Length: 444
Image (cartoon, rainbow, N blue to C red; front, side):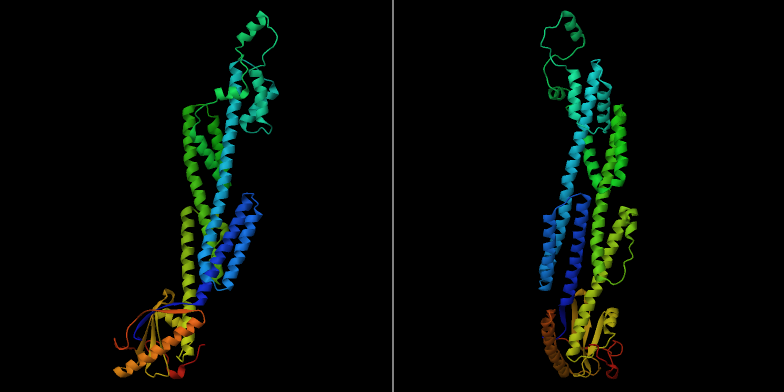
């Protein structure tokens, strides 16, 4: 069957280019992982060595022409690296949030002791009182528990073993001192607030995320939180906390979105640099000044640019491969045919062995599917001659498939009509860009 055909072409060169592109993305993903570990102050030599070994394995697969394995496994490896960063961040965020919660509880315990001392009319040594104040302000560097135990010793003095005089007992009773033998832990359990405002826990978690995602705005939220914590009017404090929580939620989500977009942009740019010889018009230093919408648009534009570059490379490889093979089969090929094919979306090539006839390609090469058919340049119709030409083209097509397969390319026949089922198309040689014999020169 060698009437009009629809074929699917994939070249070895384009597959290699695809593999090299995703390997460039992998290299950038590895750089992102290393940078993240440095920012998180994490050292994991075992995991890093595993990454290096995996990267070397992909080089080996490429050298062994195991292209499908590369295309299948590399994206998985990139996702695993990204997931590892997120997982390690989450562990740190959880730890930071717990530390913030514990620090907040320590401040509250210090305030409880101060209030209890004041209620009982007791007075602490100045140095001890200053240490409690520093704990509340978050500036104390020593052991808060040791300070609390000292204060508790003033709040609940040790029971006297000797018998008190009536006067001493009266004074002790007037001080309203707790005469039980309870410990500081017992006292704290009894006096701590059972229901803590859940907004503080959410704020602590958001601040822990922000500390990793955007340190530039972290301090401003800390200042706002300090003001809210010291606000004595409950209604006003509620308003401050609600405002902080709302702004924090939005800021953290934007920071995480920005991190994701920048990571995605880096991967795209890495592949673009690998595939394109033209310098990218991208100022990395200005990215932090872009809004989320602007950054999203930039990523989308780079994605489209990558598709365009990839399509151009793919079309070039397919056109070069087909024209080279047809040239070796005796068809007349000239140097500007690739440009003509791209411009017109079709190309007609003649074969000196079959005067008055040629082969027409229809369809852009980057679309994989191309229609091939024999064409006639003369207006005079000879049905028998047309069938003979189609029969010859059948033989050439088989040679073309074999030649391509030999060098690692594939030309898959998707649809074909029988010889003579449709009339050979008549085309104007000059209008369709085919070449006059005396102007022919071999391109390959």
